[in-house]
Image (cartoon, rainbow, N blue to C red; front, side, top):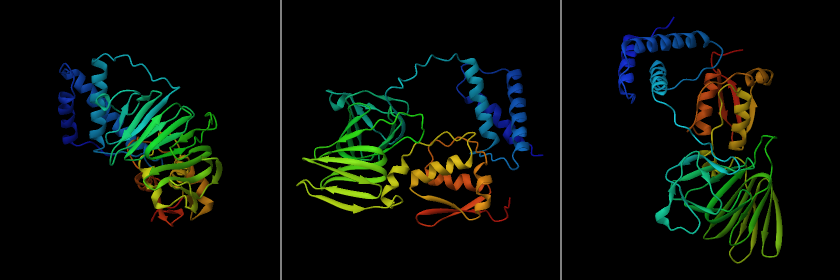
Length: 341
């Protein structure tokens, strides 16, 4: 059986002294925390075997830090937290400094957005170079704002893109309300019909790319429908050009880079692979199809906020005894060397 060494145990006392606790814990409290953490750590080691358990950082040191936070929470009364109104759009992920400007206010009053913030109607969202944002709309859609963009959040169904690009992905949960959204620009408007799509406004005009489902583009006195794989370019002079694009094209990379990571604790590998495939526009293929169903039931445990989908794939599959190969439009999943069911 594995045992924590003396350095791990000595680190506990240091963490408890520096965790921001208003009052130094006494020796009895420290001893109890030591015993609880060691017991929990040993129990996790015994359960590992085939059940997947992902840990990060220093292992035991991470558990000790969690224990210090737990002790702090006991000694400091919690403040009441008012949950955001779930009828609004809520920020799920932020990269860099993305600002919100209330309607009618100057830039001096900009608010720096953070995870959990709700977007008020009429607010302007502004991202600079290298800054991106992911928001969950009231209808369950995931909305993502690219760098160097400016978007007016009119309400849960209407958005005005003034500069840059947004990407919208419809909810996969059947319980979510599937109300369409409309993205307005100075050259035309785009309405989704259960889809994943991007709207980009730049110096050359309006570009609309459809990754999944279908959209409707209103421009001048015309309406144009476009299905998955369509890449439309509407010039400032009103000329509409039709091209095609693959769901796994490299130009979609910014979208997955800001993707909100779902809660994976207690979920199975199949749930993760389905989410990954849709985020990356890739098919999932098992080298040994007869083992696919059993592999998909492997349970995942861990917290992964802040990961990218590709990094998460590199972490999850080896922990399940699997390897993979990117074959362009598909991910081929193989048994890891030395691993057999």
